Amino acid sequence: MVKAVWNGVIIAESEDTVVVEGNHYFPQDSVEHQYLKDSDTHSVCPWKGTADYYTLEDDGQQSMDAAWLYPDPKDAAMSIKDHVAFYGDVVTIEE
Image (cartoon, rainbow, N blue to C red; front, top):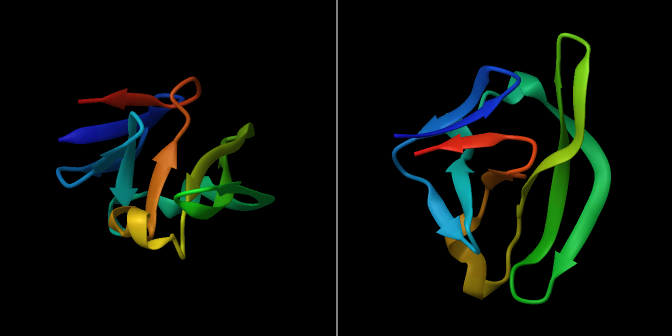
């Protein structure tokens, strides 16, 4: 079981993550969405496509753009479609 922990709270937990470039991508249904707030930030990866970002929020604490997903990835990255990943310097990934 892989867990994503932020500020002592488990924000994602799954036995079915996909690891790409060292990041665990969690299926949407394994993520506690009440901690994710939409961000206006987007980035483009040449082989994955356009990423949408989320800010983590809980109890007055925020981590800006600490999570992302590829809602419509390029063909080479279809395995992470609608999966959420987290920045390792903000979120602890426990394997």
